[in-house]
Each structure stands twice: as C-alpha cells, then as structure tokens.
Amino acid sequence: MPARFRQPKRRGEWAEMKFMVRAAEAGFTVSKPYGDSARFDFVVGQRPPLYRVQVRSTRILNNADAYVCRFTWGKQVRYSRRDFDFLAIYVVPCDAWYVIPIAALLPARLYVSVYPHHPLTHSRLEPYREAWHLLGTPGSQECAASPCEPDMIRSKRG
Image (cartoon, rainbow, N blue to C red; front, top):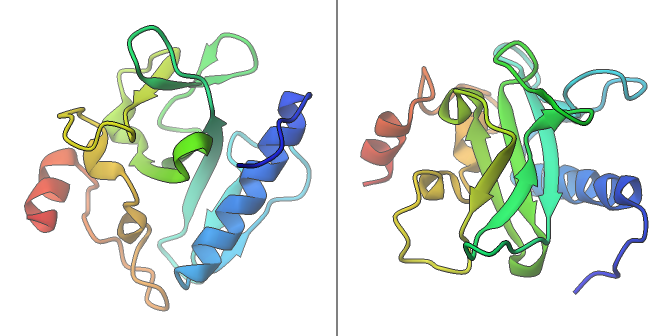
C-alpha cells in the first residue's frame, strides 16, 4: 500500500507516474504536455490516432460502497468531450485501472463511481477495467473499438 499523501496534488502526481509506468509496460508511447494548464495529462500514441488521457486516482469508498473520483475541472466545471478522449482512473487500494472513453461518461456528472472490489458487479463501467486495449495496439496505435462505445467493447471482450 502506498504512503498516504497529505496533499492531493502530490497524490495526483504519483498517480500520473503510475499511469506512465503501466502504459509503458503495455508498450504504449506516452507524452506529457508542458505545464499543467491543459485539461488532459498525457498523449498516448506515436502516430495518429493520438489519444488525450486525463488521469485521476481515488482511495475514497463512499456510503454506496463505490470508489468515487471527481469528474470536474477545478472545483465544479464538468469535463466535456472537447477536454480529452479517455479518463484513466487508478483505484489505489485495489491497484486497479479503469480506461474509460469520454463518450461512456456523458452526460457529464460531478463524480465517477467504480466497483473493482466487487468483481461480479454489473456496473456500467466495469467493462473498462484494465481496458488498455482501447488506447490501441502498441506500435500501430489503432483503436480497438471505433467509435469507442460500451456495446462494441462488450462484444469484443466476449
């Protein structure tokens, strides 16, 4: 279990490093934009299509027994389709990643809930758990499901 960070920004930076390592282990090229004013954290790919990825982490289990993370820019501005292509959520206590296309998160909410600790749950976001293949095939960077829609993902995963 990682150390508890007193500052949320430090935990966010740590989660971004975890994303870079996991994506590199999967064979992807990961680029970080200069500064931190973009509404995405990374660009994944070597050639088109390139995907903008926003990374979030959570260790908060709410009263509904779900891990939740904010889906906002700043305090209350919801993300939109223009901001990034994929949201990557790292659930710290479960060491689990969700790679979710923005289309699966719209209409926008303030929070995203996932349930990695309940493997038999029928959560609408469960098909995106460890769904690194959606970022393409390492080397060719072709999207595994285009457009990245939940029904297409379920049919490809069986």
